[in-house]
Amino acid sequence: MTPFGRRVLMAGLAAAISATLWLAGPVLAAAPLEVDAVKSAKALSNPFEVVGVVAKRNTSAGTFSLIDREEFRKCQSVSCANFLLPVRWSGKLPAITSVVKVKGTVRGTKEGKFLFADAVEDVAK
Image (cartoon, rainbow, N blue to C red):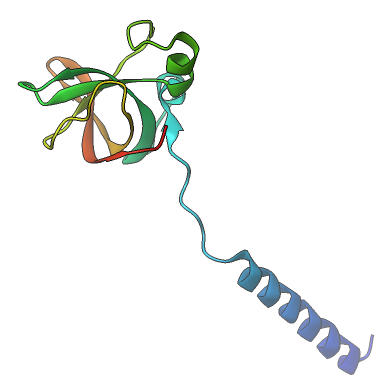
């Protein structure tokens, strides 16, 4: 291959790589986990996001529990879940059966492990 041919090849490769990176756009954030995915995860990055249905609330303790959306859809009740994800939140607690996205960090307490929420927002059912 001639030096001119190599330059043309390298310029073509550089243009192709640049176009690929430009078309890819910004990196999107990971989708929130479902409650069952949190339950079965071997390890979680902190912080992480989870989506679930509010099953219980304790206003005096500032806690609520989430169940998996699919489990709620199947049984149409918050009392049939086999796993509750406990969340500690200092803001206004969401209503029972509301679907929320929670961003936070799992930490151990004397009562067990909790997801300490940094943010809680309503999600359309």
